[in-house]
Amino acid sequence: MSNVPAAAANPMVAVIMANQKALRTVIPKHMDADRMCRLALVSTQKNPKLLLCSPASLIGSLLTATQLGLEPGVGGHGELIPFKGRGGYECQFMPGYKGLMDLARRSGQVGAIAAEVVHDQDEFRYQLGTSPSIHHVPAGGDRGAVTHVYATAHLVATDEYQFVVMTKQDIEQVRQSSRSGQTGPWVSHWDEMARKTAIRRLCKLLPMSVNVQRAIALDEMAEAGVPQQNDAILPLDMDLQIPVDADSKGGDSDG
View 1 (cartoon, rainbow, N blue to C red):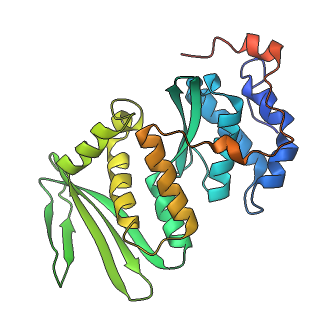
View 2: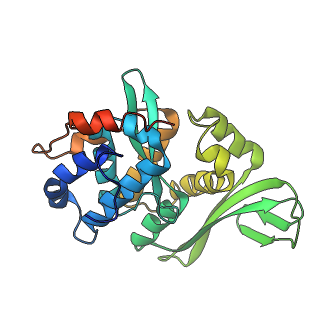
């Protein structure tokens, strides 16, 4: 594996290197095992608190992402997130809104799917009832404050559109109930989290594949602070011990 940080700087390198063979046995054939390992290690560089997570939870979360066919840290597919619990830090995989849309399309039952943020200077109206519709024309320049978020999906079988519309207050209620509502992506990428919230609600109205159901469950568990128990899917032959020398050299990585 090339272009990854040295074990002296990142103790998780040693763990992942020791388990590459075992990882390949469970990673889907259409996924690149080496690439997924590199993405996991890049994630630890971006978020050093991942180094404080148990190796089993980090690698288990990586495997969960690969089983779903989503690459952590790439194009809104999802992220490896450290959460602090009673027993220390545990890694969880949190799908992104583009990841949920990708999974919905892969089911073959959904065509176009999208989520948009509406501002008060936009031209926006929608109606429900027997002839549901959405009309949205984004304003140019300063669009003003956020007022709504919506998600739409084209149903292949019926050639109809399904959609959900949420007010900013609706989104904020979801954020406030999240364990990470005051930190992380809710602070740095509010629009993306708002889109994902709308997509997640929309997906519950669509014909869902097993992977979509699993991704939504994982996302809701991460939001609620419920352990995902991703380590349960690890192969029995995995070596999850961090070498003492690497651990001592990498112990200052938490920032």
